[in-house]
Image (cartoon, rainbow over the protein chains, first blue to last red):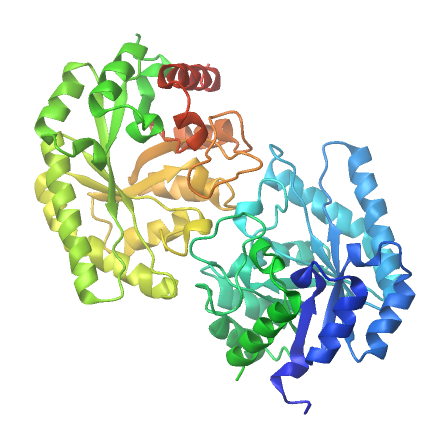
Length: 277
Length: 277
């Protein structure tokens, strides 16, 4: 594959083919011509992160990131400390895996004010940043769609994610994971992508699509091209900033998980290649 | 009931008790001490709007608004003209009903850019404003949650709604319907409520709650108090602007529609009175 082939920037999140084991993801992705892999933490259960990382690299895959840390807010100090401790374990796993980035789903507590949750998120990130820096692992805040503001993330726009990075003094290890599913509707999207990249904190770019109708809040994401997200336009905005990193396909879908996963992977490859033809 | 009783500001949307007929809504709401009623257009099917309006007023109810106009964007000029024509019929209905306000769910076309859809929305509103003004009927843009940006509304924040009002020259007949379900997550909510009221265009305030988990994109709204929306805080922001209008309970819920509707109405009255005790 030539370095300029669009496939050279294709990464898959293992959760996209959730029925496959860690080992199946590695071998099948590599065989299909996928270039990068983002592991989810469940992939490491009962396994050595070092071994998993080595297997991936030996198969020719770049380990792009580990999903996911975060969930910092909590009602009590003990809950928040529990989260900080878990994020520290996640940093150790990423280091051992050889993943340069942890994606943060920041968290929210239903009924707690979003302002307070964002403060707790900033505090949590500040608490783990020294360990991340020491481990050579970056942290990427992923803004989540406002429909997840109740219990998954109080960070719902690129602007809010940038504000947290700014408030923490713009450390080089802290940046943003931009997922089209969460941010496509944002009227400030183009300018905020630009701002993110200008601040050297555009760490990841995730792809899927928004189906009409969407029938499940979590697991009914679409394959690129079958929904309403202007993925080409957003991709052009991202590339125009000088971003040359991976395009990561991350699709939660009960429908696609029920398919033969080899066929599903073929659909993904076809969709990606049509998108970046 | 004293004028200062919180109940003096309680309005129900008929869709909240969808199993009831138009006539049942009128008689049951009035008997329960509800003060205002917002009709949905299905309430007028096979009926004379004048008669329905008179029945409501004779029962002691204020007719607050008619839901809903809008859905302006379309792929073709013919589709958009069809929508304008339907909105003109809606204005006639509102006038005959004696409803001073039409709530606009502005519309969106999956795959069409949101910028283009917002332009079509502004064009559609501009087209019907003369008829609305002549009829003495106001138009209230209701920003919808970003999870409806695919096919229900390209207007997803108070800021965007205000921008459309500004762009059309701030006509006195054009304003905004603020529904906590759609806007609670917005980091600019307090300042945008203030801006809306300052521009004398806060025309309506809708209540319900956001359940965790929410299991249906349309019909799983919560009763005030059972979700995560800081309704008291938002209500205080609204009242602090000098807003003295109705608080309109609008709850789409398969779960509640399957209940005995008299019991459901009692739940609503209890929840509202606890909220504004």
